[in-house]
Image 1 (spheres, rainbow, N blue to C red):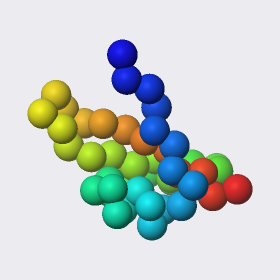
Image 2: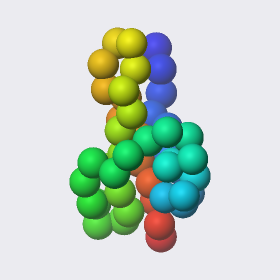
Image 3: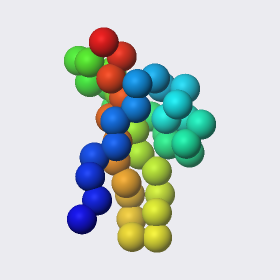
Image 4: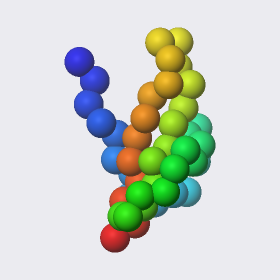
Length: 46
C-alpha cells in the first residue's frame, strides 16, 4: 500500500511532475497522472 507524499515546497512538487489541484489552509493539494489513475500529494507551506 502506498503512503501519502508530502512536499515541503511547491517547487519540489512541480519538479516531481505534479500540478496544482487545489489550495488548502496550509499549502496546496497537488496531483499527477499514473497508470492507475490520479496520485494525490500535499504541499505544506507552513
